[in-house]
Length: 99
Image 1 (cartoon, rainbow, N blue to C red):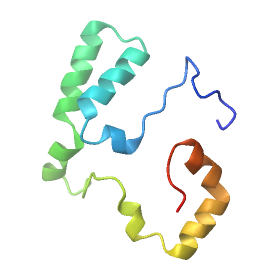
Image 2 (cartoon, helix red, strand yellow):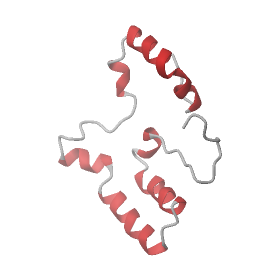
Image 3 (cartoon, one colour):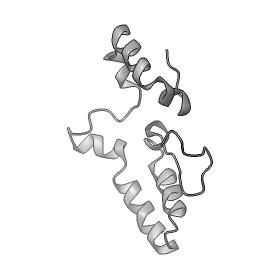
Image 4 (cartoon, rainbow, N blue to C red):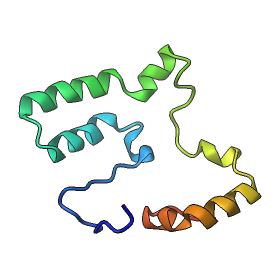
């Protein structure tokens, strides 16, 4: 995947923090990308709205908090250093800070 071209016509990247809280729009982009029919996109948007994380959080203990960035409270400086050694090139390629 690291060798894939940045703007390949058959590859689209969706990041978690872009999806959560914006499920209907992002899923619609996914449906369009995959060439779903207008009727399928309508059904998909309905389901994305119905099952969005914020709505499900109130009904389920499975989704404790849909907000991104929670990992920061668990990553010690040593774990962050080791993670960046192993995966820092991915982090940078995906546009995240390595600090």
